[in-house]
Length: 303
Image (cartoon, rainbow, N blue to C red; front, top):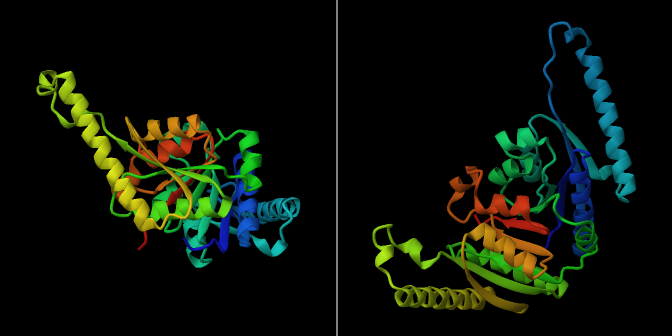
């Protein structure tokens, strides 16, 4: 894993984005990276009656936002040079800024907009993930204050590296292991396999006996574990790693394991079923990001 050198943290001044800033600041300290705060102003439409006042209103908004950014930077111990503003659609401006600013990590809070709008359109964080070419660290509103404080101080003790064993799984595991070495954390390498009945149609399943289903389950687990061992060997190891194979729904199982093992960080591929999967509201990555009680790092495969 290439050490983080440029960290971009988009902010909208909500509590969600402020929580993300704390984690981003901790990572910047640990990796001796530059942290830049970034705010995108929406371009609002003016009614015919408001057009004459548009320039004054826009300038007033710019001054207000600039003052807020300067204040936030000061509170977080950052330089005035470490803040920037832009105008446009937030997710597009953030992706463009990450590209032009050569960011190698973007840190964002989730659920920074209203629940109804989020239900219809998906959060800005999820839209950014759809187009971003670098890892994205999401800090959910479900992360407790205690966990947030620990993550901000770099106290990562347990990392769940969830992989579907796809062709690009090595990138996810290498990133998780590198972070495990950096923080002296235990890395739980998790693969979720479907229940045996998922391999059969509704007419076939009733004819499968308990012994046959149990045998198939054992073979699925053994095959998955062997592939995990091979993947771990190729990734180089060097960290305290434990291999786990569970049956179930990927997102629910990842969340269950992370809660049961009190994980401080979940690392997973940004798309386990092809790039188009990111357009689905119910994708594994998006579901985990919304519901996790710790930070979630979505890793892009190498180009």
